[in-house]
Length: 82
Image (spheres, rainbow, N blue to C red):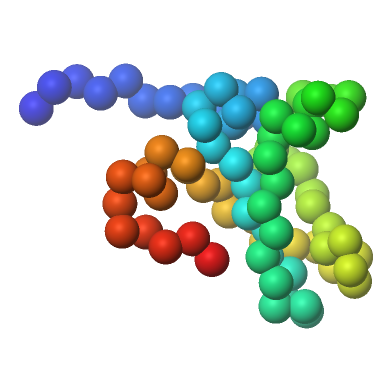
């Protein structure tokens, strides 16, 4: 098996560079919302550590549950996004 170099992702910019995004689930509202890290950076927000970042529901302001997702993996598999 060929050696595969791991991807190290800590910052929002690294998510964007690797074609990834964050999905946030609000348990109270039972809704998923996607966050595009590139848009956050373009809007002037700091390039923060995405693991430490807290995202709140825009409707009820509850803290959401984060999932990191890959656009590439979704296109290459039968994975069905939310």
